[in-house]
Length: 318
Ligand code: ASP
Image (cartoon, rainbow, N blue to C red; front, side, top):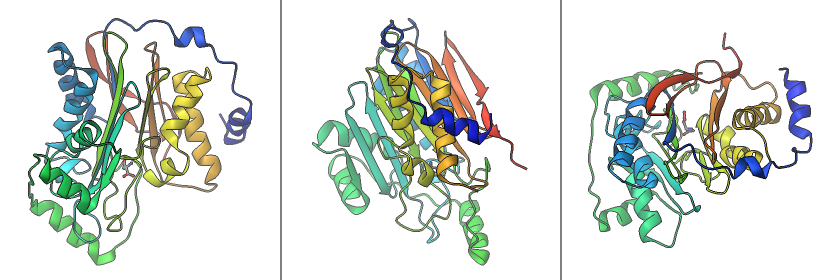
């Protein structure tokens, strides 16, 4: 579909909400979607948690925590690539069926930003803590620091410093959040999102991933969505919130993701080389995905099976 055609569709009044289809019951088995291939072990862990009678909120927390602990992952957790000053800084958020949320941003030296985000949600009246304040709060609330030095990462950063050429490249692993949206067998929804953000970002930069409505949005009355890719584009368009609101108005999940992508492209004429991908899960179990460029894959767990799926896309990268 051309961008112009897409724009017309975006601007049309949204179709009358088919609330009946939004209020049908859950599928009876959990449905979990998470971004990129690293979603496979994350979904498996989330299923384990649900099988052990954990809540869907526990499942999305524990699921993405697996990827945070993987020090070979260069875009999530302490194995992530650093900012331009050499610090790996982490962003995460979590949200439940009822919209309760916790988030942490610009956090250093904690293995599990997602667990800090969950604790902020559970133990404070706030949604988000950042930087030093978040660090102090985490230390005072039972979290401990972990220092990690990965020679390969340090070497690549030093190499990058020689040119300091900042170019987020499509599907090349200098950025790739894990975002997860899940529904348990009873139809309860939750979502999580965690990242080390864009490699070699300006020190202090926070992306979309810890921002409720941008990197993640859950509304148990409708559904959930999460995003990956160049966070600035997702923040500017409140991407995940837009996807959920479109579903609220009767747009099918995949179409909602596609419209959110088209909106980004419409708002940024001439944009090239920036990947953004969305995942959406509606409360009746319908789900969808869409990305700017070919190459966005995601882990899908459904009817007891987890597999990798390719998202439909707007264009190919040449
Ligand atoms: N969205 C993340 C950020 O901008 C990075 C990514 O998902 O690729 O920090």
